[in-house]
Image (cartoon, rainbow, N blue to C red; front, side):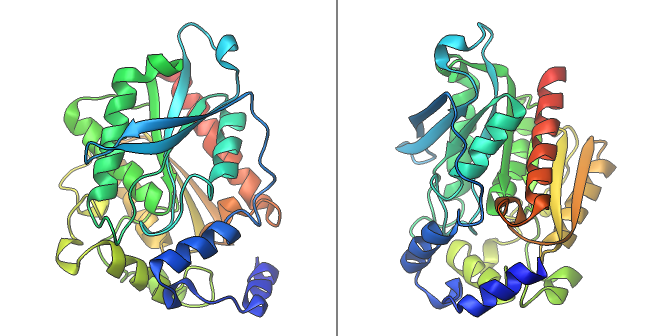
Length: 310
């Protein structure tokens, strides 16, 4: 990891926080999969349109390890996946390799959502899109050859935030989810934990970038809304079991640990995977880090186990 960070520093790329959101999106689209393994071939990769929170359709993509003709009559279990990118950057292409790996390794389907991004669509647009897509999947999964009784929700970074918030929403609506997969999630209202100070600079996700993301996506007076910061939720009783995947050298690690503790205190089953010596976004660095494949497999195993018992 240290060598990788050194190579990134020597590349002298313009930091995201020095760009406009549009420039940052283009730069991230170029960089996002450089360290991912090649996109794994799958029997079924299908473009979809799912309803968003504003009533308009949003692009989505379905990944499945079986062709439609080979899908069991009961349907495949499925994960609704929300990509990372601070609610400002990222999309279907930046996380294609990761979604393929999760589908291939878990044996279930992955439905990735291209939710609306800030600042054009500030908080809570991404939350509303997540909830709308989850509701649609719950009601219409069978039309895609998926099993509505075995749905999970997950994501990385900002997508992990959306997944945690989606799990709370599902609990409030009386919907049963098999699992919430939270990969290096943001859960706190403010970037003020010890890990934010310790890893503020030089560990890939810098404090300046976090401030830039926050300023673009959510006005200060909304940041204690639990839909932005799930640690602020009044209670977590009865939410879906969780698999929480964290990186030791990540500004967000303390709030990820705090959220896992809150879940456990509420009686929620939690599988915690903490990978030592790696940074935020490590799960997308499989070409360089063995921990990426280990974390992908751990996430897939948690999904498989949850779907088996759902």
